[in-house]
Length: 370
Image 1 (spheres, rainbow, N blue to C red):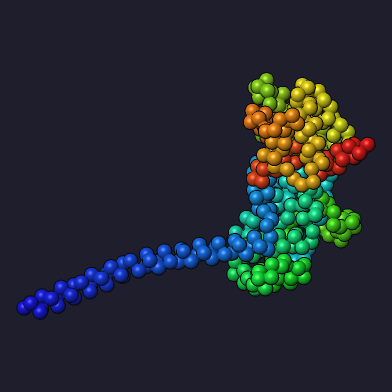
Image 2 (tube, rainbow, N blue to C red):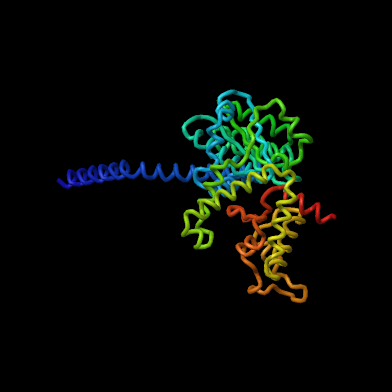
């Protein structure tokens, strides 16, 4: 009887352990899978950062969130864009005068492509060129940034990067242009279709005559439409004095006047007159604001690389006769933007403060040399 009791208890214990394992092994396996996925994700991140440290998706997020609802929709709806999306190997060239909103249109195009990619197998990559980063944005770095984004979009292609990393890691060497180009071709083979958007190509200055280079491409000029201008103004009414906010007729008049002013700017080439007018507005400010604006514009214009708001705010607080910066003297970025009469903007994601159109940079450099 004792033996039977022992055997019964043993059988029950085995049964209980079996049930325990049956219940908990999937949970344990799930935990192991999660750890493995986290490790793979960290590994992929390191590999992709090795290929390119660029953060164009951050710029994209920063630009597209400044879009006034409904503006720029004419671009993705244009027949030229439909043809570009449909016909393989087609290039769409989108010129426009300085300040026409080309960067915002690029962001709208990218946003449109990313949404299409969610329900298809197409690839999307993009680059925002920057006058201040000409030395860093050579052919190798631009192609590496495109390669990084396409591998991110299809992680099964990361093996192409792993092989290169194994080759270079022990030697401490970098990817060559030929290696980047070949790997990019290998990764492209995994996509049925890939669309690439490059904004502000003239700012990279690696093509001598951009108009000639794209002479055979589809062409769609970027210009601020009357409807877009009205939508934008309507979306900014809350920033204006209460007398305007309370008067619909005054709002309509304001919209019409701004539309007319935009038309005048479109016809005016070059834009020196517009920049002179902005400088006149700066000159009309209080002494402290006027001097602050001049210092801000000088630092942004002549800095050899893009400046963050944290950097420029501290630089402006430096006093030659003091060893340390007084925290009370450090400006905030809103103050800097407000005194510069619309000539500077802050990219919230990157924290970089910059001149609005690239030609503003050229104008200030030109008058600074005069």
